[in-house]
Image (cartoon, rainbow, N blue to C red; front, side, top):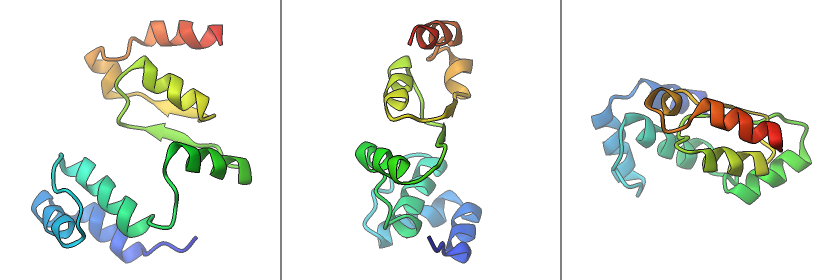
Length: 114
């Protein structure tokens, strides 16, 4: 997989206003915070040839020997269940643990049972 490193670097350095301008120019909704908008742009401009749907990720994992780690965007134990069903190797919960959206103790108990 070839990645346009110059474009990727510019997306990581861009401020919100620049990202919104890029979004408008690429028919991407300009809503969301800077990281959400950056992720949408990377998805469309850098990873446009990769199927990032649940089934696409499962298929990719079945075709390759990769360990997928998910970080960010998790808001409930249901998200963890979905990721577990997708055979994701690990998750970084971060803010959801801090805000209490995901109770770490309950999550550990739930996944020890599975």
